Image: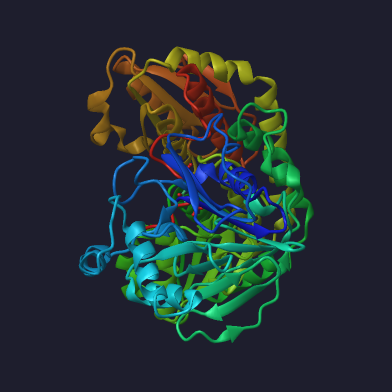
Length: 588
Ligand code: F6R
């Protein structure tokens, strides 16, 4: 939530560098944006803020300067207005602040600051932090004021504070991510590493309760609690610069959908010791849980079916936000495996923190090396999906599924079969891409639908949930995925003449029962869109998905992604930036 970017260095185009940075972070929030720069000619911060997406805006009107910060907002405190957009400044325009998170005790702090004559012009909690730093810096040096302010605030937050007088940036966090980028006589701070790629590959992921004091020539890290200096080693990211651009595709989402075959092929061809180690840990543990949020929750649910079918292993499942209510079952012999693209989702992090406190071991399937989840887990399995920029997750979903297929087959000592069926799934996806017009046509037919119902059993149940989520997220059509067997227990009441009903009917043990579910819908007038390896007379529309055994879930999910994407286009919506959503949900 919220994109944060800071620059300090030899270039006098600080505002433009920061602007490019927040543009590339816009997937984290796009209610409003702002940039603050310290002009070369004086030390009063100049700020430009606008509401809405960045679009074709520019900051060419901002003065040259060597230090700037910028922010794309996903509103929490205060509505979407220019006043509430970040950066916020102090009374003297010599401090500017950008923030990600929620200051829980802001009202109480504000009351005290008003007594000391601080003037507030926004409704935000961030402005309170700005004035608190200003107040403390009257009697303390700047970095210490930031640290002291941070200690007074409750909640989970990340800040970059700009000090115009001393020309320094202070980054501090205890919840939301911040990454420091190292350059030659210039340094950067961003809320996500991909935003740094055009500028540097040398980074340090700031940990909770760490503070970075960043100047043109130096980055120093301190313990935020006691101010002690910490020696750190930057790490080198091996991501490609092209990962962060749309290339020949009109949207990141389409680009990312098309990257899936290559990602799965790469996963299949790499031999990973981490897979063997995690499989071994699952074997030894008494009780394993898969947890995640949103799409990652549905992938976790799919994991339970995969482990049961492939490895004869019972695995528990819970959405990460519900996991706290399962803690009573955990012991030191339990294993909790968190699934997360970003590795920064607050609900997921809270779940594993609680699990760790119960003594459980933590595993993680994730996309971002160095993320909080990566650091907090005992076993890490990277999914290698590369940077995912579209807000709705696609390639990370299927890459995680591919890792789960490999993990389950490794557990059953049949890794080669896992690799074989994943290669079949790649062929099946490619076939979908070749016949994409079929999906486009169905999107065209469904564009005015108010409700879409999606059924599946077994592995197709989480598939139905995931497809419904994608459709809701980016086309804003109400879609409901459910277990086909549950149809007759209630939802069938909603099916009437012409209701769009998508039925996943793959070539597995659920085939007959899924068809029966589709028939029940058809008998009530439902318009049946069958997704299957072969056509059937009850389908009004048919989308072919070539069988890939258990890995058929992967192309089946790709159908849902493409359908959601084309529905968004049919409705003239931007699939990359759906309303009200942000890429990584770093608040509770
Ligand atoms: C759906 C989507 C979200 C994320 C969820 C978890 O398209 O993108 O539901 O899956 O916010 O995010 P990660 O996987 O980063 O923990």
